[in-house]
Amino acid sequence: MTKTHGEDVESHPHNQETWNKATPVNRGNTHGAGKSSDPIFALTRIPSTPSTATSYPPNAVEVLQKSFEELKEARARDKELFEEAKEENRKQYEEKLKSHALTMKEEMLKEARARDKELFEEAKEDNRKQYEEKLKSHALTMKEEIVKEANAKIAEMFAQYTQQLHIPPP
Image (tube, rainbow, N blue to C red):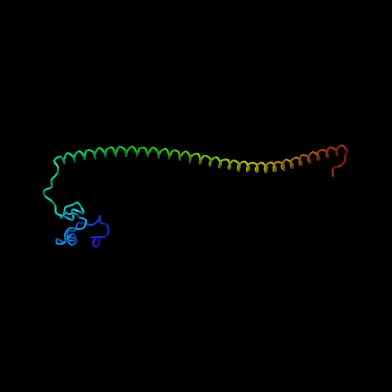
């Protein structure tokens, strides 16, 4: 069988011709098959020829029905346990997701605050520079105005002085 169908014994099909080669009628019992006259049955627990007269114990139907009902109940319990476990997993996942979302929110908030602080400091520095420039510009303008006013007063005073002395203006 392994020569014909490979090493995996589970995949071997039932092949009467191969069994006949392995266990010819004049050879005797197959090794390990005990005193069974049907070596296929000894190995697979399936008779090589189907029997028409299969006998069942008198309460076999009741036993099977009881087993079937027990299986149905066990399946219902298993389904209920599965649904409970599924709901519990959903709740745990939801909690983890909320926790992760809060952590992410806190991290994003920290990052946003840090960025806001940077932007505020940059804006403050830009405003300081602009104010200094305006102040310098204003100081120059004021200086020029003061010089103009001083020159005007000097000119006025000179005119008054020259009128008092009666010196003709140059």
